[in-house]
Image 1 (spheres, rainbow, N blue to C red):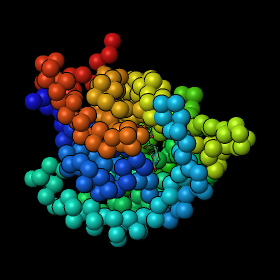
Image 2: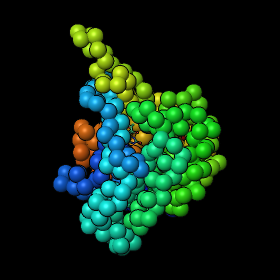
Image 3: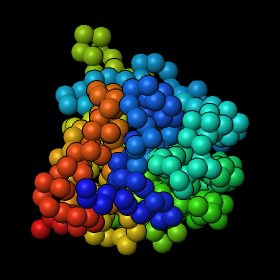
Image 4: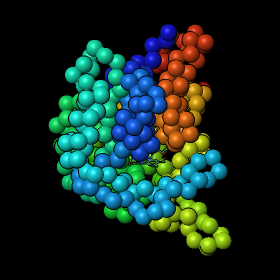
Length: 312
Ligand SMILES: Cc1cc2nc3c(=O)[nH]c(=O)nc-3n(C[C@H](O)[C@H](O)[C@H](O)COP(=O)(O)O)c2cc1C
């Protein structure tokens, strides 16, 4: 068996496979479908300081090799998460046994509409001993206030990351938007303000039109594209970013199988996330974690770090 443990900031992951925010609920919804204890990490649904209704329906449209969504960060807010969801997660995983029982890192995806708002949400999550990291979503294309606006401008990104860094004391992952000319500029800004890692990519902004009704298929006109169609773009951005920063890169975007995951690792990602593929096969993340192990064994590679960034 190869060593597939990875370290991301203060996180010690049992394997490099995490589930992407917004595609795996709070993890517990999948507990009857697969062994969620075997995941490297679970990035829970986007959480904001105060509750959000999300956008009107329709919020999803299928595309060739992927999907568009404009859910718009529907969630019940940070206090609800702390009071209701966190205890359920604790009852399932027994966070106090983290050092003796294998379990995924539970990571909260944090969003907001101003640096202060992001920081206030992050500091609520900071109080939860079982949550070792947050993923800062500065890349949501489906909300009017904030979201992607912070992730498409290096100065704005720096200001959010610096506010959150001051308020949050554990591992800080910053999730980057692909809807930019040069993603490495934003990654470097996040690194300079104290991010422990960056994850990329969030969805690519797109749209779709129902020609018989002459109407957009999504309620707000545009949405975020995800799934296999975005993989080549994501892979290119992961490769560029891994060469531009010294902090770990977490790669995602269209990963559906072991071979996709290995491509991201070779491009320079130290860990990966699975998003839209969960909707097709709820067990896909577990299969990919096993698949990476098998692939390394078949190629006589003893440690996963030997393939990270190994593309020539
Ligand atoms: C329905 C849906 C909801 C999402 N919600 C969030 C979210 O709340 N926060 C976030 O950072 N990303 C969110 N994402 C983006 C995914 O986490 C991921 O970055 C993106 O889908 C690309 O990966 P994939 O192609 O493997 O799905 C969402 C994606 C989908 C499809």
